[in-house]
Length: 96
Image (cartoon, rainbow, N blue to C red):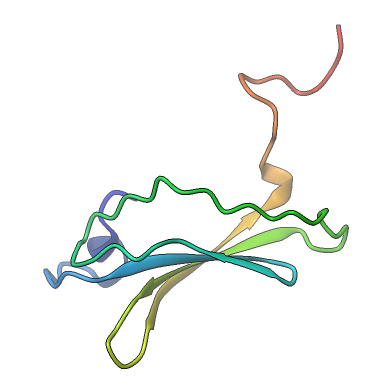
């Protein structure tokens, strides 16, 4: 994400305390909160240990601003799992 504040709030220069929540089926993971920044970096993994349910086709990714009273959702994005591949370097899993 190039600049979280600009992407979701426009040219407002206020810094936020962002974190990300990733949801899949009945599982949820959360990153740490990055304090007072418009350019957060998360070098973190969120791992779901259960097998993917066949009817659930997407991940829900939400960006939040942590507040002293209430957290505020900044944006939500869905990732279609059919577009994600576990293969690297263009390998489609086909044997030669």
